[in-house]
Image (cartoon, rainbow, N blue to C red; front, side, top):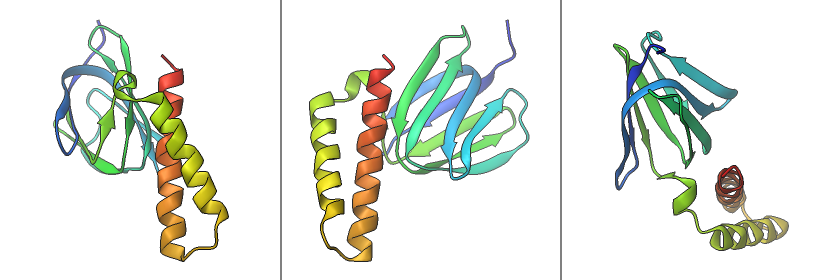
Amino acid sequence: MSETFGLEIYASNKRAYAGRAQKLVIPAVDGEEGFLAHHANVVAAIIPGEMRFEDAEGKEHVFAVSSGFVEMINNRAKLFCLSVESPEEIDIRRAQEAKDRAEEQLRQKQSIMEYHRNQLALARAMTRLKVTHKQ
């Protein structure tokens, strides 16, 4: 059995997971960032995207996450995001509608703030669809 570390995943409204993990991969500004047991103590930013981890038995879990951060201290990782959704929790039709709506809004003339807001909405919808297609 591989070495493990403690992992807790929190959304703003729930605890999505608590247990042991062998590996954690988060979406980061410059790509993906991975964590294994006994990783150096660190706090890292999370951007909206796909987060994966392998539990103690080696089963891979995939979640769509929004922005947040992860802290890895003393072989224990705590991940905090505004939203954390498993593929089973995602309504594919609603995510597709959100993607279409965000793409249409991006084609419209808008302020810089509206543009960035619509970019984030599009990224979230596309992540949700990507995670559901992996099931």
